[in-house]
Image (tube, rainbow, N blue to C red; front, side, top):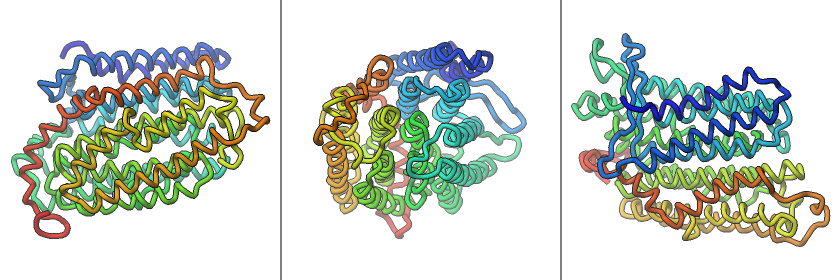
Length: 509
């Protein structure tokens, strides 16, 4: 084991949170700088890993492994490949932007940033863990900070924050319960007692050796689908998402929509597909059908919403439908598109929520009928809204175009009807996004907004950080797709092995 880069990335926010415990409540400036410094360090190290990652070699790199609970076969094992590295980059980019979006928090800032840093660390751990015990541990760490932050700093604009917090937490814990049962089943089934392990690579090897029967794979994958699917806001486990975002503070909305939801898609690929490929193949038609409900139903609901957070909340549910469709197609192209779309949606959703948070912080308004013509007074805010909105509709040159196009290409040969419906979903997305932009930004000028200042100073940093990534990956998509391809291409032999396996509909697709 060389330089512990990933451990530093994981522990930097935790160390900062511990340091904040010893600072005075009145040291607001120091509190904010410590949080920003920790996330800047984590992002710089992640950028180094991203730039130096050897795409030609592929596989797990920057690995660390230390035996921990030997009786259970648990190790402190970290690593990144072409699938997890973009997720780690996404986490740290959004984490830093979330810190700056919370710069003006004046209600118990010390507690807020401690919980925010613990939340970011938990999400980071899920993406870099190579041991399922560490994965579960980090995931459970995430749930508690979210609930507390919604309860204390949440908004009651449309739904009581208590309702939003408990609903969000119940769905997360429900998903966690199904996930836990599935993982324990894998642990017990893979190897006999002396050799049992939570190591993901060892479980993949057990699957390739035939340790899991077809019936077991179908059952275990269904459990994981319920767990990860609820986290991914897969229909019918989606209703927590808009309500949760509406009641959450800006930083929580950014992290939840931007990265926490992506743990579901990441888990389906890393654990569901690689360890239980026959189960993935069996349930693929169901996943594809539910994906279409996500895309069309959520887009339809978004069209009639007035609250900005609800619009983006339902838009998030709709976009996760594209991720599910890419996964269900079970080919290298579609899965690459699914991973890339998770990154793209994370950036655009976080940018949306940061800008909505700024509006709400200044005006205490979030409803479209109450907002109009903000472009006259807030041109910088307008840039952020336009970038996020146009990326959401898949405008070429922005981050959302290539991932969605890749999903359509990969899924069309497998589910042509669903692919056409998914393309039609873009039309619905364009309708509600462009309507929102037109009314909120380019309506007639309202004099009552003259008193509010545009984004300036630190307030502009979320726009700059997220905007650079959104445009950079849009203009140079190979920077993202190249890394992802190095992680997805090794899955090709697994996909070929299950090509003739039966599905839920019987026979072969």
